Length: 174
Image (cartoon, rainbow, N blue to C red; front, top):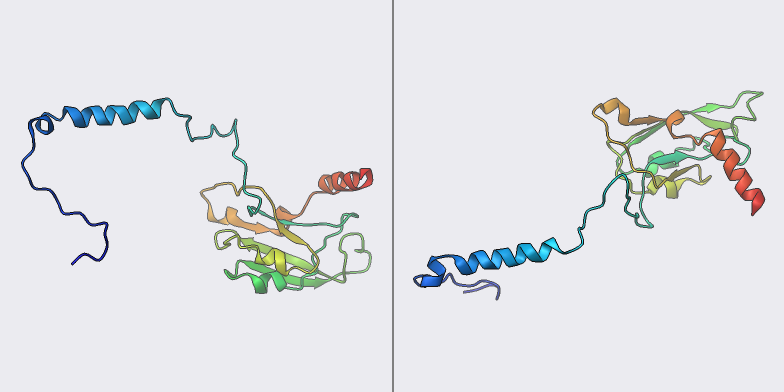
């Protein structure tokens, strides 16, 4: 009894003369090969050409700063709680007098690490953050042979001052 209609019984009849000399099979294979020679190749010549990413692509994590260059992260820990892979670890610290130009709120993340080998790029950390301090960029994670390279620290993820200045200029022109 057949469970599906896809099963076909094997034909055990003797081969004909044309099947014995294999010429029809060889010609059929050459026809398929020649048809593929004249088609456009599906490969992209990376790094000269790059393939466009999907609009919902999630790449490397970035810790954002505000317009004045202060860190937005308040070390609330919601991103670490929302992470299903438990890839985010952080330690909070109190802002000292005179550090108002560095940190936006009274609390800040003294230690912020993401283990990229555990991260599943789900975007839950980005959605959980009430201050929009973390987001997933459109940058592909580079490859490496060492495991410690994939533990990203706060300094590796923070936006640089040049990027903040470029963002400020962009906002002033708009």
